[in-house]
Length: 269
Image 1 (cartoon, rainbow, N blue to C red):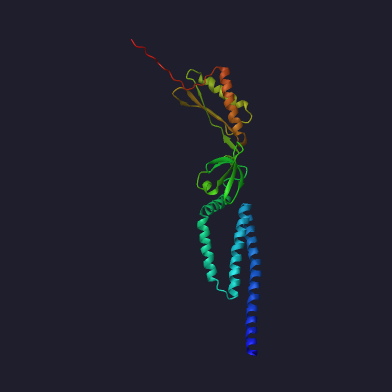
Image 2 (cartoon, rainbow, N blue to C red):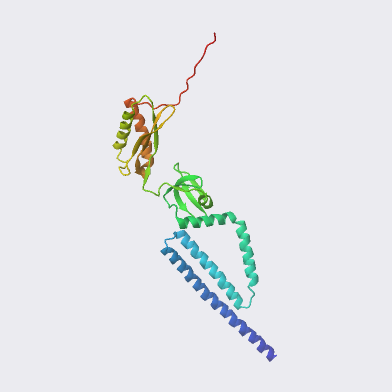
């Protein structure tokens, strides 16, 4: 009986030591995991990585290290962790297949946050939508259109297509094509176009504007009018120029041709 008690007490002590060792490994491992996650976030912060991506990657590092710590602690208790690893791998595979599209959006989101093709507040054309960037997320980007609609664009659609950032540069060029009649005085037309451009203080002197004949079309002589403006003035200058050109041409007797069809009727007899 005494031998049995000694045997049981020996087992209890052995398992007690293993249990305390597992607890110690878990506590120390958890502390190290937090420190490594913090170190990762600080390293990413020095690299000027987006705040959202920085926190996410820090959390990923913490979770992966914590899983490793738990497996080591279980191994200390004598529990076979091979089956746990197999189950974890199978579960990860199943989740990956079920969330394949979301994982694609996640990967694209990481690329967007790392490459920074645009930032919040930029006007962009991406993923088949155009608007102002309101939010950049891990899985999608929120755009606000000019008529105040909100479009949620999956990151995979953005990263797999062309991205046009209208706010990246400080200046933009307004491109207008103005057609006049062949009977009009081209020198007079050019002078009036230059006069309109020079009257607008929003139009930049450098780079210099361009006014030139670009095409002798079927029913008109086409001029290109290409002034440079600040990006935020683009649309206001664009619309104002169109209105001023039409008004000035009407005042000066310069005609802007429009498509016409001549119908000739032949009588019988």
